[in-house]
Image 1: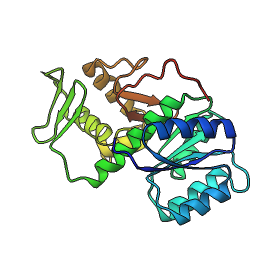
Image 2 (image 1 turned 90 degrees about the horizontal axis):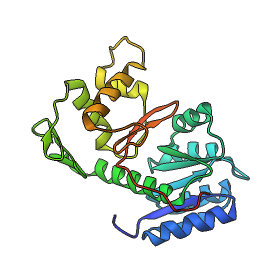
Image 3 (image 1 turned 90 degrees about the vertical axis):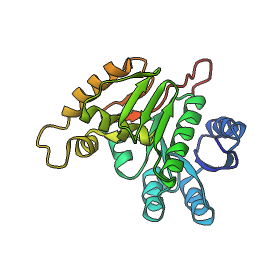
Image 4 (image 1 turned 60 degrees about the horizontal axis):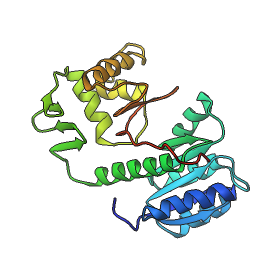
Length: 239
């Protein structure tokens, strides 16, 4: 990860702000930390940031409104922090423009991993089309339409291949089920959005990817899926 990328950290709890800021700075990010929504909007209007970590429960201006206003003028990646894990709140956050979310309490190392993943996604979107994607033992040959796991070619269906490419092209991005249905099965597919679950199940089996301890495809409860090579967060405090 190239150092010097700018992160706006918006969190009203001082201890969380200090710990998360320290972890991000240790990874080489330039961090601007503020404690309320009004200050967040002021900073976002004054400076260019590569990513925003945004708490929902903020004084002065709520996190949802901050996210909406930023989304009106920018596509900067946003990770939303929430004290609640309800399905409705997660879906609402993604619908108003957040790219990912974390439910408190969370590991600061996991947050850093999410930041890295979204940074990779943003970088990939600005790069020319790649011929190959490599994630550890997993190789996706885009030109040859082949997938290898530990140098062994996998026998994927057309839908499984398209699903994997869609997810893996932008690591860290959360894809709602209906969006995957449209991208993988087509806009004219008339089945229920949960139909994508069977394709994910079959793809996981071929990737030897246990959903309880995923290496590649993570379930986002109540929403859909994201591709993120596993990174451990053991031994770190939770905020």
